[in-house]
Image 1 (cartoon, rainbow, N blue to C red):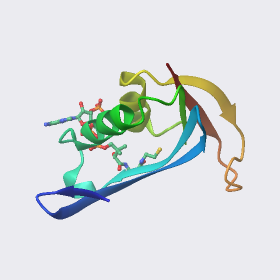
Image 2 (image 1 turned 120 degrees about the vertical axis):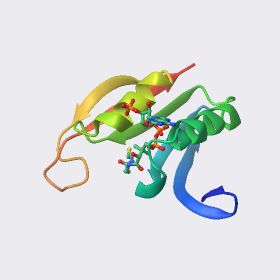
Image 3 (image 1 turned 180 degrees about the vertical axis):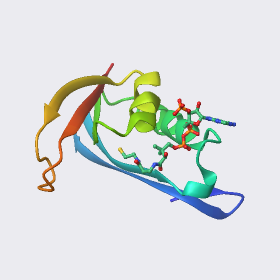
Length: 99
Ligand SMILES: CC(C)(COP(=O)(O)OP(=O)(O)OC[C@H]1O[C@@H](n2cnc3c(N)ncnc32)[C@H](O)[C@@H]1OP(=O)(O)O)[C@@H](O)C(=O)NCCC(=O)NCCS
């Protein structure tokens, strides 16, 4: 849960895969709170909290341009394209941050 002044503005989740690797499962900022820098702040905080993990990854739809721009601004790079990743007939991009 992402709270701002005690108001729920979004959610983020992640899963620790092993001692080096974390999968970031989802970042959602409620529409009325988007484009205020919150998504970036939350990701920066999470990356700091997870600083001991060497590899972080996530998947994103290739047309989710603002999300891709946000992740790339934090150092994520595109590793591969996954066709029909969630079984919805749509591709996803695998983005990875290695450090
Ligand atoms: C993707 C998502 C998480 C981004 O969250 P956000 O809080 O809007 O992100 P930010 O505000 O940090 O940055 C987004 C944009 O707002 C801009 N921005 C940041 N602060 C701003 C401000 N004070 N005024 C105007 N614009 C601002 C950023 O420059 C950025 O613009 P860009 O996309 O053109 O580069 C959000 O759009 C979302 O929840 N989308 C739906 C769910 C989703 O697709 N999640 C990702 C799944 S992988």
